[in-house]
Length: 173
Image 1 (tube, helix red, strand yellow):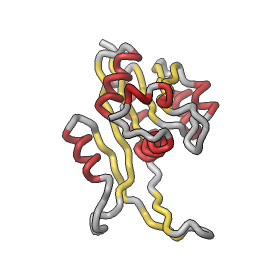
Image 2 (cartoon, helix red, strand yellow):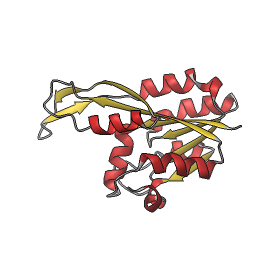
Image 3 (tube, one colour):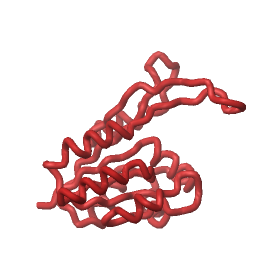
Image 4 (cartoon, one colour):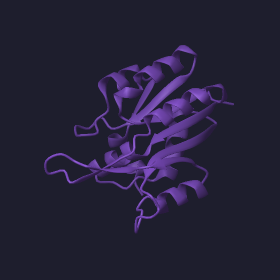
């Protein structure tokens, strides 16, 4: 039995979907990745920063609730608000990369395939390490030109690359 763990950079895939003018179906995402990578089982993890519950409405909460109810392991931490420079106004920050890397390494004994859903080149060292210890790494991101285009180095070092922009029809709700 071939097992995969899926590590989803929530903020990154949100921006990719928005730039492709689509609404991501996470259920379809898991199904399609399972089919295309020929794994028997996928355990999905979703990482996102959340605004404090004292805020009037947290737009992420319905998605997080749905993901948890549908078998995703959701990892969150509080987002922080910062005053941006120039005309940026308030900027919300909540980097989850370190949390993702720690889990990718901590959970490595339990999977054969790591599915990384992010376009961030900062993940290249962990991808290479996982490959060095015998894991297959699949990167799911967009190769379409824009602000969230996959890092060339990340795409190049992946064992397999799945392009969201080419799979848009299969991944949309």
